[in-house]
Image 1 (cartoon, helix red, strand yellow):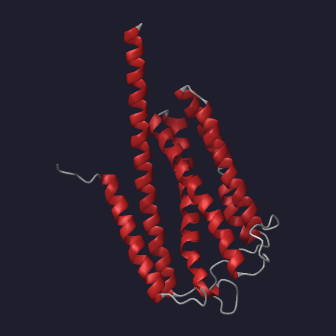
Image 2 (cartoon, helix red, strand yellow; image 1 turned 60 degrees about the vertical axis):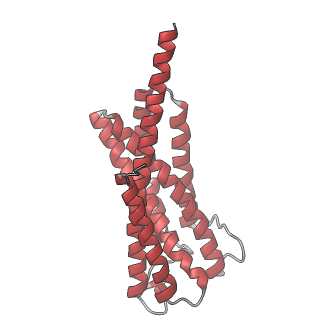
Image 3 (cartoon, one colour; image 1 turned 90 degrees about the horizontal axis):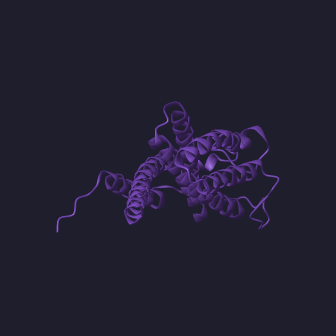
Length: 235
């Protein structure tokens, strides 16, 4: 039996290959005083992918409202599914990272007063609400239209999450080129290269996931049409 690799699987293979190679680079070449700082590469990559996913969903929802093509609605929804997963991962790794490295949390994993944590949680809950709302609507065109509007309305939570640590006083460090300041430990060529490779790998993973989710949607649609046809034959 011959097995043929699909286009989607090429993205997965390349993504996993880059992640494995980068894992050796991170442990072999980067220097950290504490092993827990390794979380940085995956926390930042997950945050990037969640922002990127929601940005793609915004574009897709706008295009759906303009062109009324269901493919845009499906891609917008699937981008949000991937984004919700990774923003959840971002929240978890962010809490572990800060608690273990900064000492500012005093063994508390959550600070409501921290703007980055709070706004990112709002971002997460907003898009979870989107997915729940979309799931309750049965009519396909109505579902696509209302969820597109909701996806556009919720998008401002994305720049709010990103800018919160810049505009407001936050415990969240920023990669800093100035010696002696918070975030400087991440500012060297090897660490930035490893981070860049992780971003490429995670973006390829995004492409694979949305393509696979689309195939699942099409299979579900075909199954529904088959069931409907059988029901009409039985009448």
